[in-house]
Structure formats: C-alpha cells, structure tokens
Length: 147
Picture 1 (cartoon, rainbow, N blue to C red):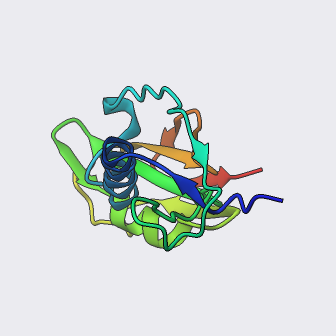
Picture 2: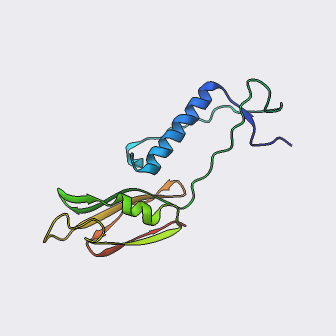
Picture 3: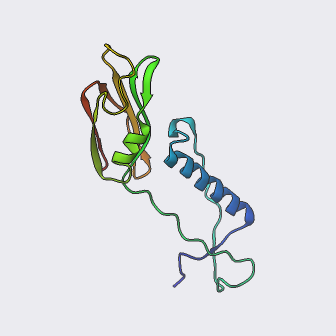
C-alpha cells in the first residue's frame, strides 16, 4: 500500500501550494475577506512517490488540514460613518468553535453613533465554506452555528 502522505511534486507545485497557504493565513487573520478573492484551482497531476522520501528530488508534504469550526471573516457595528470594527471581538469569541453567540451592543466597541440605532453584520465560514451573512440591529444577538 502506498503512503498517501508522500508524493512527488515540482517546484512550481510547491509555489502554488505556498500561495494557497498564504491566502488562507490572510483570510484567517482578518487581513483579507473571502469576498475579495476568486479562488481557481486546477488539480496538478500528482505522482505518488514509489521511492523513499530521502531520494533526492522527492518532497514529503503532509496532506492539507481541513478547517474546523467557525472562522469570522468580517464584522461591522454602527450607522454610516459612525461605526467600529467588531472583528477582533468576534474572532476571539467564535473562531474554531462549533457555535457562538455574541450580544451586539455598545459594550462591544463603544457607541460609534450616539442616539442612533445601530445595525450590524457578520461574515463567517464553517469548516472552510463561506456562509450567508447574518445581520441585525443594536442589542440583538449574533448567533453563529457551524454544522
């Protein structure tokens, strides 16, 4: 039986994989949003290694880890220009979990628009699959569920 963890790939395949990893890290850190990227992937021809990994020219690479749980990619709370970035609070409360709830009120980042009812939205993914945006108004609870 061939070990699926060992396969041979070219330097260009390695560069492509590194670019994908960099994009995943940007998305996970919140520095980029999934909606701003179109991901196109053509599976490269993969030759399963039939020689030990120590053979020159053979690269041993672990199979990609599948994302688990929630990953918050964007968060907004406010009204017009009077808004604040709730992404850090949402990521702390929710990332990696199967579900989470967070009260969306002035306690999360102050009152960005005094005497005006604020709205909010949250963009997130579940196990790497983008989910529909959820939204609401001030003092409602953001409930994120990953099934």
